Amino acid sequence: MSGGASVPLAALAIYFHNAPLKILFACLTAFAVVGACYQVWLDSVSALQKTIGERDNEIAKRSAEIEKLKHRDYDEEHRRLAERKVNALSEESKDLVYFLLHHGEMEADELKRHCQNPAYYDSAVQRASLERLVLGTQRGNVGRASVAYFWKVNPQFENVLRDLLGKRENPRYFL
Image (cartoon, rainbow, N blue to C red; front, side):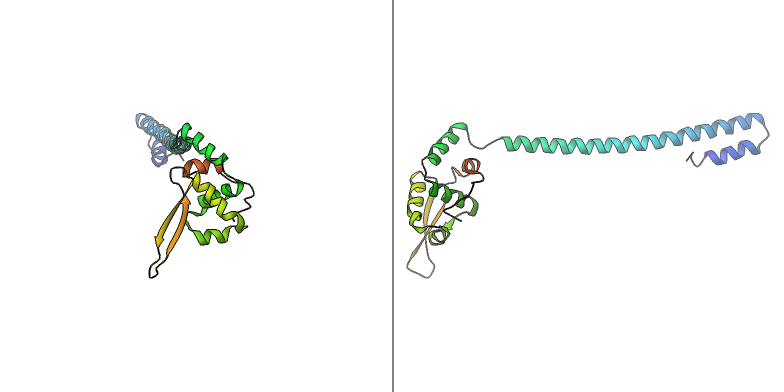
């Protein structure tokens, strides 16, 4: 605990009978004890500074993440436009948009299978399409002379719709 040099120096101070040499070894012993204590203190301060630095880095990362989450890639006017469009939708159309937000682009027949009441399917798709919140695309079927229809959320409104519709309580029409 008192340093490797202090014990031999203390033994030498006791062994020699010359007073100036005893004082020299006693001073060197005291210096070794103080030096060892200083080294222990320095190591603990360095470890504490490292811990504080890591904590400060973590706080800075979290603060940057919070600022990033505060920033939206749409302005208030775009949000108001999307709100008007969503408010013009029927409940089944809102469920359709919510479903497509979470499941991505889907073939029309597959989407219709997810509709709990097929009688509402056409009106839900038509209303959401008229508001330009969902877009339809056609693709040819490989090896067939037919076309497949796909529906997806309009990329212009995708982020703002995620914020507006968020977690929809009890979707009833598309599951």
